[in-house]
Length: 51
Image 1 (tube, rainbow, N blue to C red):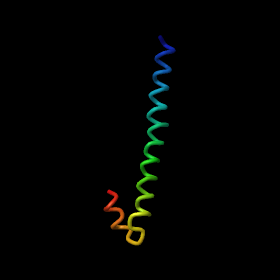
Image 2: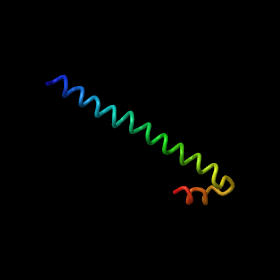
Image 3: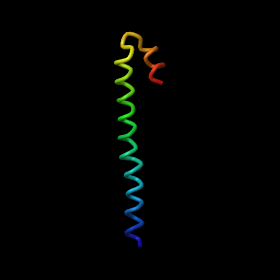
């Protein structure tokens, strides 16, 4: 039906835009935290280690 199709489309948009953005934010925050904790005095080395 039309209502099911519309709900499916909204679900896809929410999953891609909402959940996808949150996942990227969590991973980015995790890597930034590792950068600060592994080699805080040598940022370049820390980038390479956490790559």
